[in-house]
Structure formats: structure tokens, C-alpha cells
Length: 156
Image (cartoon, rainbow, N blue to C red):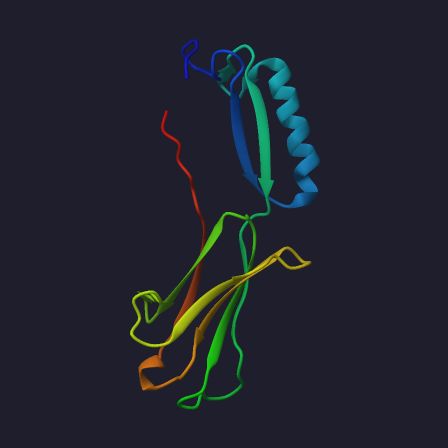
């Protein structure tokens, strides 16, 4: 990107993308504030290069809703059990499963384990599943679900 020192925007009308995480109810106020800053040609202490266009993407802030198991009581050997992790937030969030603090890598597992991400539901919740088809003593432990946002970096 080129421009005066302290300016943002590409020559010839480039685009600057801002991503916010927060409740959908705030979307109109955020968009309004961005439009006012664009009109002034400044965002905080940063000047916009002439012709720069701003675009806004707003996602719900990350919120872990629940982590549950599909069975009540103890898991019996040779039975399937499924853990579900429900979270609300960005479409770019990622789920990672851990057992006793160690990453569960189902692609390298020698046992029959699987993960699945369910489509967004009507309450804007994403659900990640971790399934183990035939439980045995090796599956005992504390399972945790980590939810984060994937960040994409673009080099120019």
C-alpha cells in the first residue's frame, strides 16, 4: 500500500476491511460510526488515502455455550460416546479438542475417532462433535474444547 505517512488505503481506490466482534444489535451503530469516520477521512489517528473504500464485517463475539456428553452416567466399554461443544460467534471460529491437556488428533489416531462441525443452527450456534466409536479404558480422562477465531494474514 502506498500513500502519505500515517495513511491507509491503496492508490486508485483500494479497500480497507475492518472486522468487529460484538452483538448483532450493535451493527447499525458500528456502521454509522464507520461512515462518519470515512466522511472525515480519518479513523482515530490514521488518515485514509483519497479514494480508499472501507468495508465492515461484524461477527458475534465468541461465547462458549456448553460442552456435554451424549450419555448419562458412566461410559461402558465398547460403546460409542459423543462429546459436543456449542459456541456462538464468528463463522471463522475453529474448534480443537483436548484430552488431559493434549490435542486430540483424530487423523493420526490408531482408533476409530471422528470430529464433525454441524451447520449453524437457528440460534446462531455452531456445534463441534468428537465421537469415539468403541470406548475403552484409554478413553478415560478430562476432555476440553477450545474455541478460537482463525486469523487470515495477507502479505502484500
